[in-house]
Length: 145
Image (cartoon, rainbow, N blue to C red):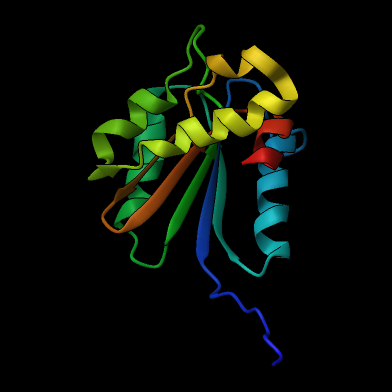
């Protein structure tokens, strides 16, 4: 019996959270876009915002309200220092949190970066039927994610 695997293309938005990155040097955002498009998904929109919870929340809220956006991927702002505020920006928007996502991500990440993975506050959940995954800002973390 011949099984052909096919995927249902999803419309995905990508948000890079950074005070310093631009489209020219946003390696993590480019990795996410490349991975989603090469696996057959569609890019809805990609943008960069500073690490400011209100600017993050404004962009994500707009995407959550857009019925055509099915998934949101964020990169950056998940650490424990300075202005890292992506989890604080996203959590109030979630209807449900996918609590095991962070644990699984850190378990996989541990194989590469050992205990440094503890600094990652990855987050996933659902808001208005839109799945949201918040990944760290490193290109390695985005590849893992």
